[in-house]
Image (cartoon, rainbow, N blue to C red; front, side):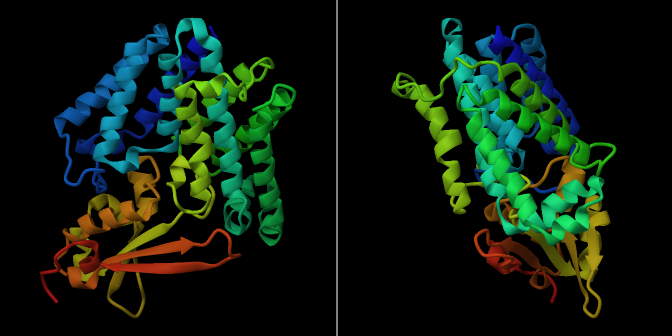
Length: 382
C-alpha cells in the first residue's frame, strides 16, 4: 500500500533526524537554554523516556507501517517534548507528524483520502516555501550562498531577481502538485530542487545543517512515489465535507498565509531558508565570559573599543543542538532571559535581534532587549 510505504519513509527519516539532533531532545546533553511553551516546564527523565518511545515506535512502524497506536505514540510524544522546548518544533517535526496522522484519521478502506491529504501537505509546503523565499534578502544572501558550488555567487548577488524567480518556480511547482495534469512535471522540478539543496548543503558543498539531509531525501522519495497519482484531486467537493481534511487544509494551506504577513510562525509557514528569519546575538560584559555555557565559546566575539562581548545565538544553537533555534522573537527572548540569569553583570547584558522587513527592499532594524526588559530582575555587580 502506498500509505504504508510513505509511513516507512517518514519513520526512517524521523529516526535519522532525531539521532542527528540528539542534544535538542536530551536535556542531559544540552547547554543551550530551553524555551518551553508553559513557563518552567521540565520533563526531566520523562523527556528522555519520551524520546526512547519515539525511536522504538518509529522502528516498529517500519515493520507495521499502518499501526495507528504507534503513530499516536510518536505524535503525542513529539507534542509533549515540544511543550518543553519550542526549539524542537522544527519544520520536519511538524510536517512528518501531519503526514503520519493522515493514516490514523483515514481507515485502510479510504487510502485514497490519506494520499490526497498527504499531497495537500506537500503541495502547500512547497507553495508557501516558495512564496516565503520571494524576497530581496533571499535573492542577495541565501540563494547566492546556496549556489556557491556553481561558481556564480557574485553574479547572483548582483542579480537578486534570479533568486526570486527560483523561489517563484518552487511556489508554482507546489501549485502544480495539486492538479493531476501538472503533477508529474511539478514533481520533477521539485526533485531537481532537492538535488540542488543536497548538493549545496551536503558533504561536497557547505557540509552544513546535517539534519535536513534525510528530510530532503525523504521528501524527494515522497514526490517520486506520488508523482504518478494523476487520479487524485485535492479540490473534490466531498473532501471539504470532512472535518479532518478541513483541519489539514487550515494547518498547511490557510494559516501559512498569515506567516507572509508576520502573523504566524516562520517554521509553520514554510519560512525555512527564506533569509528573513530574525537573527539574535546576546551581549554581555567581558568579565562574564566564563559564566556562559562552554559550548558557546566558539561563537563568542569581542567588540573592539568596548568591554562588551557577544555570542551568536543562532549559530551556537545549530552547532550545539544540531538544529536551528526556533526563529520567533518570543523564543529568543526566553533564551536571552535564561542567559541573563547566568551573569554577574546582567545590567550590562541583553539581547539584540536583527529583524528584516520582507516587503521593503533591504530594510532591517535592530531590536534591543536589556536583561531588565526580558523579565529578569537585574541584580549583581555594576
